Image (cartoon, rainbow, N blue to C red; front, top):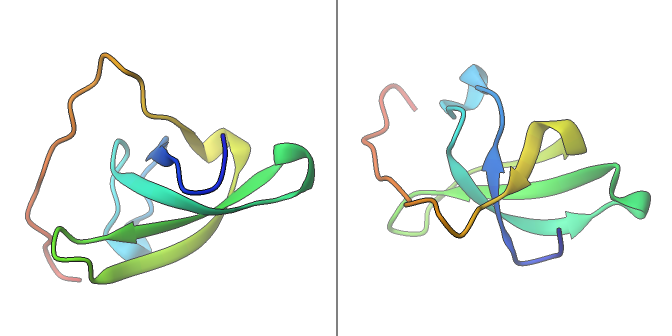
Length: 75
């Protein structure tokens, strides 16, 4: 995966109100692609979190997937 590509969260991150399947943008790729810094935003562009995640916690968005919107609760 590369900077500015979309990434799918592979697990819940409850402390930030994020769920498995949420989509963020990669803003930094660490050496050897061992980890990624991913920004998660609302539909209006407000940043919810910028997280450094190990490679196992994110995956590329597949071409056969549809993006989904949901309402945030308690964030």
